[in-house]
Amino acid sequence: MTRAPISANHWIAGQLLSSAELHRIAEDVFRSSDADEAEVHIDIVCDALTRFANNCIHQNVAERTLSVSVRTVYDGRTARATTNRADPGSLRQALAASASLARSRPRNPSLLAMPGPQKHARVRRFFGSSAEVTPAARARVVRDVCRLAARRGHTAAGIFATGAEQMALVNSRGFFAAYHQTRAEFSVTMLGEDSAGWAKASAPDVSAFDPLALSGRAAEKAERSRCPRELPPGRYTVILEPAAVLDLVGFLYYDFAATAIRDGRSCFNRRMGKQVMGSNITIWDDVAHPLQSGAPFDGEGIPRQKVLLVDRGVPRNLVYSRAAAKEAGRRPTGHGFALPNEYGEAPVNLVFAGGRSSLEEMVASTDRGLLVTRLWYIREVDPYEKVLTGMTRDGTFLIESGRIAAGLRNFRFNQSVLEMLSNVEMLGPAVRAAGEESFDMVVPPMKVRDFHFTEVTKF
Image (cartoon, rainbow, N blue to C red; front, top):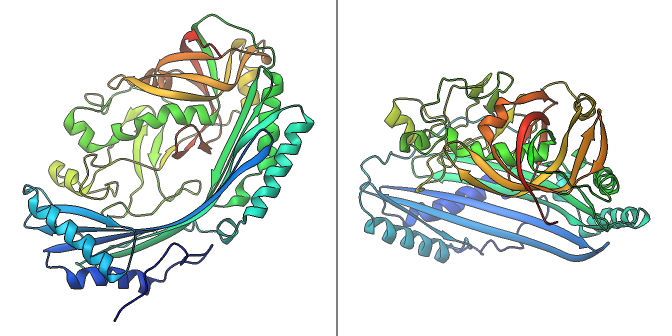
């Protein structure tokens, strides 16, 4: 029996493949395979984006993609091949490519058998309102944003993106798991003659944020940072908004991996169980958190567990893939990536415990310091001390006598994340934050003492 290929046009907004269709794709592979084991990973993505600049829309794009990835195992040798078609011929070609690659690889004596059926937590992150947003609806939002910018004498630029994705993982040992979710993202920069303001939000549910309110916030930052002053480099008390916090602490992702500890490339080597952050810092990985997103199973199909990573400043636990767990005599935590990979595992749903202080209270409590909206061009200088360098942008302010006194020229910083998290004086409520990086986290705003700025930037 032949079947028409699943083309990019198969999935209209909000329409998912049924479990039977997903199973059928995998069974086409399994029937043709002579491998000891086989695994099929199916990804379907439907994304649309409206981009604007100079107070007008200049691009609208949409794409619907299908990816079918086939992994085979022959006597401890494994490899993966991928196709963007699901007709039987294309699936057989991907299977043959995977088999050829696997047979040519050296045997991996630590390769584990694929898992059998598993039970996963249920998470609801598909919203029809997000999947069905039309180009006209996004255009109306952008029109209102650009009108707001023009009224206030600014030039607006940014994106409004919506979409949905579906994934399924199936193997020849009877494992099947499927997941689908939607996403929405809005980012805006308001540009003045000598200043800028920025705001960004993302969520599975498009109604979880207000693009016009975000734009108003960005416009206010641009207005308050006009005629920026210049301060000398040095160590300052800094209030970091959630986006700035995310872009710094996000560099800790791989340091909580058991494989990174084993290989001696984590900043927590020789620091596990020791006080390396302030006692007000507690971090979990929790895929089920209501502000998080992502599948409740990892790249191998293992259920993601909630893991307490840092308890009141002390790193307590790591995350484990199946291979890392077997090597360490532990249970896997469901944080492995699809095999084969060189990364091992990582916690991808970080959640920081927050506090009760608002940004306004943090500002009011500061005699002299800085308020930082966001960071960019961040690079790692010292991976073992977690020293990062980067720059502030789009809303950096001087605080004097408990109020915002002026906008500032931007700074370059050189700062250890571990030192920063040891110097946190106040925490706000944790929120879903979106920053320079593509991942989102649940983090609070922070007031930090002795943040190290090394030079003033040229813009």
